[in-house]
Length: 528
Image (cartoon, rainbow, N blue to C red; front, side, top):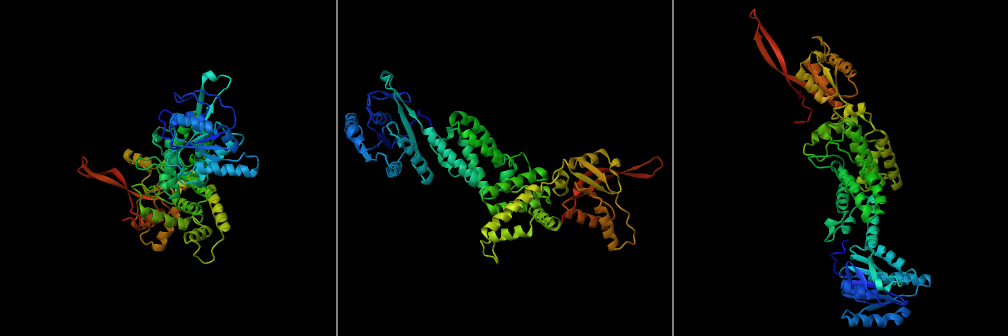
């Protein structure tokens, strides 16, 4: 908090002891108060509070109460209100002190200033504990500033500096807010930490904003917002990670102990962050697994179950179904991926996790509902299984068809890729890392439907696991059967289009040549 522009002080809460107080000029923020034996008097002159509360034992008020009243009256300051506190010699006295201090830190119409200079024995510690308690349990606690007058009686001529300890209170607030974020995924408490008039200048302002954005996405299951870059926007996980890394530098000079806690935020955000455009391949699976694990850690069990279910479908999804929330997301592609997952992958949603998910979604309004411990244990096991089921690059691109760097384009035609022209070869390598030829089989003209199915099965047995695309052109009925089966595995099926050029040779014969134009995908069922 800047000391150059001090906010108004609605209430000054100060301790008064029994010691011998020398008159001295107290200084704060480049301003020096009139000589006075009372820090309270100096703070009133410097901060101009509208209310003064003095916490004192009966003996302390007897020794210095009238002197403080006279000093304030002489400088035309408000009269103080004395609040009696016990000496603190018994456990009961300590709790009475706690109650008195607590009441005075509440109910103010504006910022409260707490002066602990004359606090005796455990009183300063109690003041800190009360401040932490009030700020933890009250919905809108008043802004709090803490001061201490550092006076050295050996050098009274040098005056005394008033030190502001508010940053230590801010540290406690941040530590509590970060703990709530790490253990529950909630960042609402950070709003109060950066909501003042000078919030834009606070080093931790961007961290607070990034935490709030991440928290909202986490609480509302905005998987795309959390994990992928879409439409020119960075993911909230990346934003949080960058904000934490920047805040660590600022915290070194602003709130040094906070840097240690910020390391825990990095551990949370780093597994989710990445410059990914979709959730394909092993990297996408790791991010979804990390998100499911995070939901489990913060006790959001339904969200964990939903996340691993959708993560299982991802392995059977095309590129347009792997970018949740993006403008090009295709619901039809996602529905087809879900059907493929149900047919081909028993792990994407086991019977147990499906039962648990339905039980929670219907708020126990089901037959034979599970115990809470059974739900937690079941989801814990499901998340562990999903995390360990990290696909190899080959497996990932077999069904997650958008990882083009590790994928394979199958050439299911009678034209080996060695004979393709340069344009067709270049277009193929733009889709996949390699090309594999599988000769389109000859189809006897008298073959029946069963024979076509057998030929199709023979071809499918040769399809490599990492296949992401297939060029399929040949006899019509077998082509249809192959395309149907390949699409069921999540493989994009293509046809090559060409331009026909006709020339005459020297003998007058017409010669046709074909020039590749583009690959065109076969429509998938229900994609109209």
